[in-house]
Image (cartoon, rainbow, N blue to C red; front, side, top):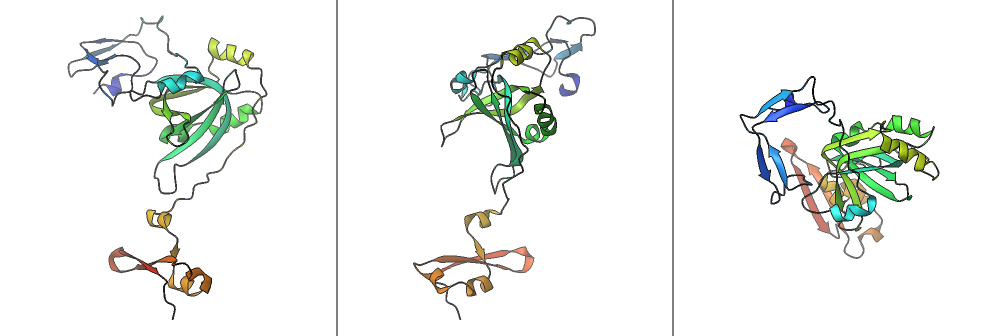
Length: 252
């Protein structure tokens, strides 16, 4: 009802909204204790001549060292800034996943590196070609607004992750970016184009290697030592698939 009435960068008078305590709501991205919730009778009025003194962007940059403290269940939205030092391909998350992402890395003024994962449309729409071209002339400063911090369970590393609210700005013309550019004293990163590496397979293929009867017949005798298990498939009517496993498959 309201999405079509609002656009980023415009100023509005919004009346008849409710203040909601969101401290106990785990499904809401938050960095404050309360939020404004629109109701059915909420009124939205666009300001054409007022609101010029309201900043178009409101950015509160989170230092890299504070990201571990933000990797909490409430998923506060964070803004990070840095020099792009690597741009990964837009690729599948795993061999059996339908989800795609792009990993990027940025470097701060202390030469610390932070990885960010751009999921779905954010990874696909990331202007890789422009970044690679601009990097040939100098550093490319990126702002990732509205990301979350995530603790990787197996590696213990902290990743930035895109959210539904994420916005990406390259070499934005604001004082913070200008100061960042003049303060950066390290070597300009050399960026290269990376091709997708993940080859998608079916869950069955990911679980085991598939053999045809002919392939099994051509295997050397040593392949059947130690109780080796082989899998075969056979296509039958109505596109059903039969999966048989056997130990010490006999050859005749």
